[in-house]
Image 1 (cartoon, one colour):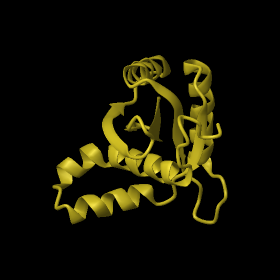
Image 2: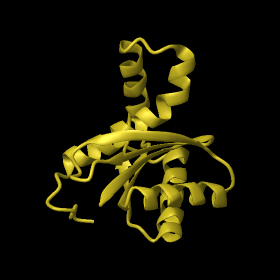
Image 3: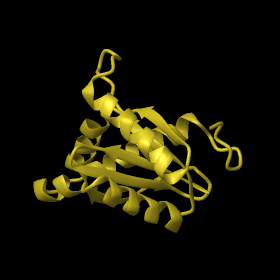
Image 4: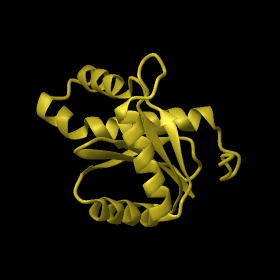
Length: 144
C-alpha cells in the first residue's frame, strides 16, 4: 500500500506517490484542473493504479501559522476527496515547498519552461517526503 501526496492549486494538482515501503516519494504527474468530477476521476485512476491506501494534501498555512484562503481551499478539497475516494486524507503543512522546489530545479539548471511544467509535481514530492520522514512506516500503519 502506498501513500499519495498532492500539491493542490487553482489550476493544477501536483501528484506524487510513495514507494511500497513508504520510504521515498516519486513525482508522477501534474493534473490540469477541470471540473471536480474530472479531477476526482483522474485521482481515482491513480490511486487504483498505485494501490494507494492514504492521501496527504499540502496545507498552505501562512508563514505566521494562521489559516488563509488557500489553506481553507485545501482543507475543503481534502474533505471532498476523502468522501469521493473513500480513503483517509491528511493535511500536511507545506509552507515553502514551492519555493524549495523552485530552488532545487534552479540548482539542477532546469530551464524556465520545464520548471513551470514540473514545479507542482516537485512540490508534491516535497510534501509527501516530508510527511513520510515525520511518520516512519511500521508496516503500512501510519497512525491514520
